[in-house]
Image (cartoon, rainbow, N blue to C red):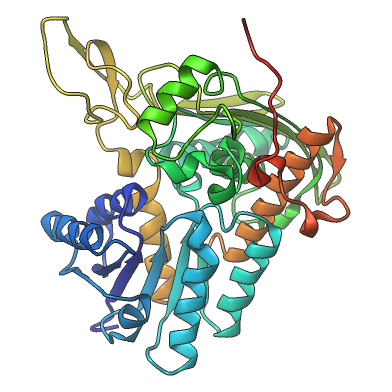
Amino acid sequence: MKDNRLGVGFIGSGFNARFHMLGWKGVRDADVLGVWSPDAGRAADAARYANELDVGAAKAYASIGDMVADPAIDAIWITGPNQARVENVEEIVDALQRGRGTLKGIACEKPLARNVPEAKEVLRLVKSVGLMHGYLEDQVFAPQVEAGRALIWARGAATTGRPYLARAAEEHSGPHTPWFWQGALQGGGVLNDMMCHSVLVVRHLLTKPGSPLSTVKPKRITAHIASLKWSRPEYAAKLAKAQKGVDYSKHPSEDFASSTIEFETDDGYTIIGETSTSWSYVGAGLRLSAELLGPEYSMAWNSLDAGLKLFFSREVKGRAGEDLVEKQNAETGQMPVVANEAVAYGYEAEDRHFVRCFLGKETPLLTLDDGLEVVQMLMTAYQSAEEGRTLDFPPPGLDAFRPAVARGTWTPPRQGA
């Protein structure tokens, strides 16, 4: 750490890492200085991207150990694939234990791991070297979520009573790269990939600002999963063509999931969180939404209500892309535009927060302990869906549980005609 600035290295060079780098334009007191990826070419491309954004003199490293050993690197952002999470953290910790470098902190993307034992191992490893740690959950930091939550609690809850129902959803047409679609690699399907956002958002909204999440405890979980679109023969064929190594005719993952979570508050109330996630959503592109309701008030957020809309007639020709909104599904007609997605989705604010935490200026809002509890909630949701019943949280034997989707043994009921 030079002149009270944080030098940050990224593990991962893909879509998620680049969103963080884009958000870094609004981060002070820190520079993106390094990237490691198992694909050296992609690492170099991501480092060039950071340089083009002017967010730091980034360079690619040959190994995680080399990046940790560089005195310029003070903190690591882990943004790689789920299946590499434990291995990546092991390499960081090994380098530190052998005295190859020093770090101020580690921030890890969602979900913390593919299952409870892996999440516990990540947490154990990080704590074994005494590092400050943060759990990267961008939607909690989305400006609309934060502003709405603050106003609801300051005005509505303060005068008429605490909120009692929160809803959160994330929906799009499917992930960018093959490993997301493969249950054994990713740890599941859309529930593991995206409900990690939603379960934390509803709990965050229901928690009084300034109070810990532990004041709103999950007590019972009911969940459902389905493959609504991508296991249909025609779409399984399209998916296999678009995503190498993915065969939903033989090894499907769920493309829809929902849950109802009963929370108990520290002042004795039972309150509810509802979540919904989908890879089978048909619309302009990624849609995030949240609601919070109480006795005499409510709030609502939809990321596609962005204010800016463009219209292109069928005479406007061009290549497919994502320049209007993430997971964009069309290039003609009236389209909403999310003008600064890294800000709107919360990347900028979360990165700024954890930089300040690792500089000793703030206390982490979310730690890897919170990430572990999210994984426990997700695994309980999978178990509920498989057993077709509501489960107390946490259910017995959760550490030994692996979703059928992750084991490659899940057979979805036939959906539709």
